Amino acid sequence: MDTKILLDLIANQGFPIALSIFLIFRIDRFMQEIVTTQKEGYRQVLENTKEIQNTITSLNQQNREYYSLRFAEVQKELTGMKLELGKIE
Image (cartoon, rainbow, N blue to C red):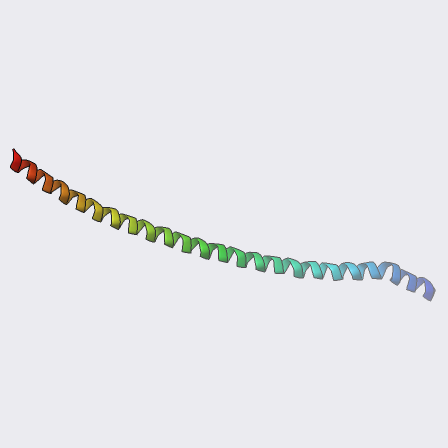
């Protein structure tokens, strides 16, 4: 086999193969970075969702406390009105 033919084969066949392997490794590293970034994004979304849920729960608890106090005040006023109405009759 002639050396020139061998070098031509390496140049024509080897370079595309080497370039393909190089690009595959680059794409693989890029995909790993994407997966890592996506996992971090999911973690942040989950963390923010928990924070929002805790805030909503806290607000609901505050509303329940406020309305139960308000209801107790209204009941006292109604009881007082009943007593006054009872005295009038």
